[in-house]
Length: 184
Image (cartoon, rainbow, N blue to C red; front, side, top):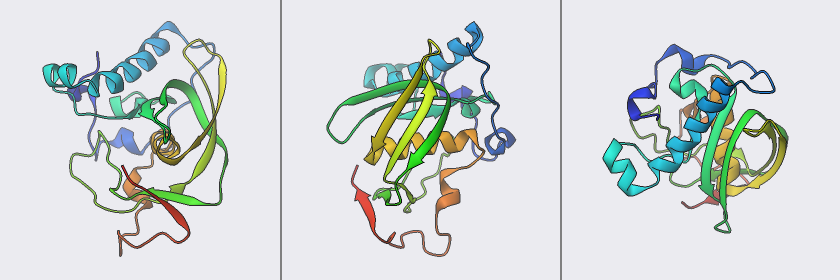
């Protein structure tokens, strides 16, 4: 089971490296790592389990955040309609995206970043993701709103990009033109 002690913090060199593709079909070890990423985000959202194990709530986690430089992410989040999206993916990639942007009005957070970064982080409003689930089956997901933002945030981790890299340093609350503001 992954705990907060397993999650590396901002400044660790692995967070700035590009993760390697996972060999498919995935090994048992890779399946176990990916499964444990999903277990963390699910457990962190359960108040009883989170308190018992001292887990900070999260809705996504990428393998580089536990110092494993492989292209694996887990997301457990409700979409705009209240549908639970719970995915553990090998080699996820954005295959298409909207021109239109979106951002979270409350800003983004990260399990690897302890301090808050109140700011607007521009993201694509809609994305199509392809990746492989735990069984090695290819999935294609069309996402919008919060779920699109979460997947972009986690895929950025696979490329050594942190969410605050997208922020306008001179004016972090500068309105993002023609973007959808998402309340959370």
